[in-house]
Image 1 (spheres, rainbow, N blue to C red):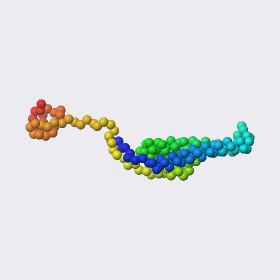
Image 2: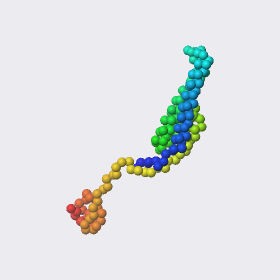
Image 3: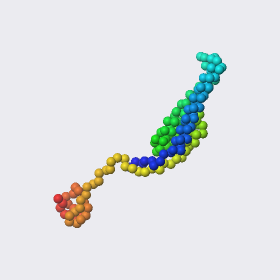
Image 4: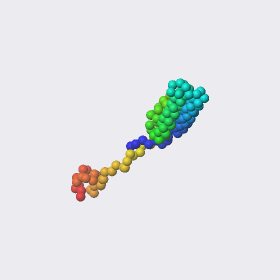
Length: 157
């Protein structure tokens, strides 16, 4: 028997996905601000990079990376609802250390506390049923591979 989920953690998925998309947008904006600051302030400093460029570009790249992990984990959360604890924990951790904010954190917590309702199903084809027959003398059900009825001793053909 294999447990199959009846429902998916849709609310946790949607909030985590929104958090990841917002984190991606914030990361791209920070990266663009870093490039704009480098152009406004001029190219100076070590190897032509200003401190503002390095700070904003670094934050932007970090935001893009964490947002991509959150989006991938949200998709996995929706695809594999029985593994909701693993994917929700990843969403929660990267929402806290990333730039996604409240949506990702709420989505991660919601996924952690979500309880799936499952149905037990067979994992493959039905197992073969034993073949039985009925004794012609006493009328009891007996196994197909016996020569004599275990109840009355009748020889079976």
